[in-house]
Image (cartoon, rainbow, N blue to C red):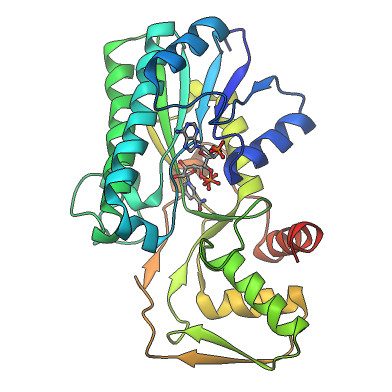
Length: 309
Ligand SMILES: NC(=O)c1ccc[n+]([C@@H]2O[C@H](COP(=O)([O-])OP(=O)(O)OC[C@H]3O[C@@H](n4cnc5c(N)ncnc54)[C@H](OP(=O)(O)O)[C@@H]3O)[C@@H](O)[C@H]2O)c1
């Protein structure tokens, strides 16, 4: 491993904060400027910081991240900002001679009709999901730029991890911005606190989703920084199995202590029937998630109670 700190972008986000927590436990030397200290849309600023800092490795966990409504409303911002941040960071890293970059992609990079489980070689083989196409295009382009730089400049190894959906500490629980798992925790906690005996579930609850505890993604990132040479250009990181939406509600109800009923609202949209990433490559490389769904839900609910509930 080259000398120098690890630079983490997006250190104030959910992924970044889980990464910083683990870095503290493992005594890893990390530098993590916020967007106010280093706006990645400003190429000159990024180049200046990288030339001064000369990090051994960069983890790119910054991005404009949002739910389906925001993606539909503002595709220009999702495409342009995510591309600008990724492109500026990678080009400035190459300019500063940074040897290793670990870029974070997203499972929305997979074509909407790819068969489950989603294998790494399926990226850019078909039409993207239209509701988040801008975001997905930027993610695909940044991953490809990592490949191109690695091929052109032998001293640079720039690679991409594709995590499945995440949940965990530092998640967003506000219903306007939350994903499925934090939304369920918040809903069940509110129902329990106000004595309601029914909670609605959109659709019949049989759609399947994969969620990884964000602390496990942090573990994967440090694991593969240590084994950078064996890491392929693109690697899925997931729990390795999915659950029905109904199962997320049931497991969260046990953790939260909600004893009421679930009422399925069949008039509501449910999205894709399944989205699971293939984790066989990661397993072959010796990494698997360590946190079970119930353990992850407990830790997330503890965080919710201590900080928000
Ligand atoms: N959350 C998931 O379920 C999930 C799943 C798969 C992949 N990922 C990927 O993981 C990465 C991190 O996601 P997250 O959930 O941690 O997102 P998040 O909580 O929304 O955090 C986003 C981070 O990006 C930073 N950022 C935004 N604009 C910036 C700019 N112009 N310059 C510098 N930094 C900027 C933010 O910094 P400030 O707060 O300082 O503005 C924040 O630290 C993203 O690439 C995302 O695609 C996330």
